[in-house]
Image (cartoon, rainbow, N blue to C red; front, side, top):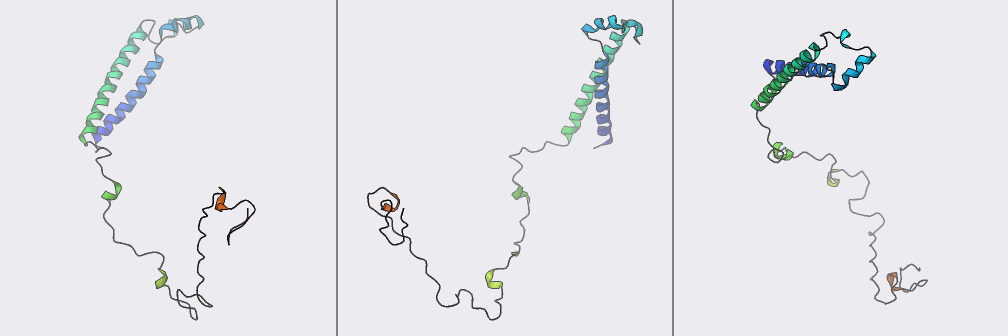
Length: 162
C-alpha cells in the first residue's frame, strides 16, 4: 500500500467512528420527553436550537468526507487490477510445475532381500499351495428358498442347513 492509500484508509476509519458518535449525540423527535427529567436545554452545550444545527451540519460534512474517502479507496483498489474470476484462474494442478517422479517410500517385494534359510518367494513350505474350492452353482429348483433347498435340509455338498 502506498502512503496516500494508508492515510486515506486511516482518515476513512476515523471519520466513520466520529460519524457514529455524532449520530448518537443527536436528539431524535422524541427527545423532548427527556426535558421533563432534568435534561432540558439548560444543560446543553450549544443551547436549545444551536445543538441541532451544529450536530446535523457536522454530521453532514463528515458523511460527505466518508463518501469521498470511500470513492478514493475504491479508486486505489481498481488501480491494482481486477482479479480473474474463479473459472478463469485455472486449476491448482495447472499452476504447479510438473515434479520429477519420486521414489516409493515402501520398497517393492522384489527389492526386499529374503532372510537367510527362507524359502524362495511364492513357494509354500510343506508342499503345493492349497487350491481354492469352486463356488457352488446356484440351484434351479423352484422351491423359492435361498439356495433352492427347503428349510431344514441340505441336498448339496457344502450347503448349510436352514
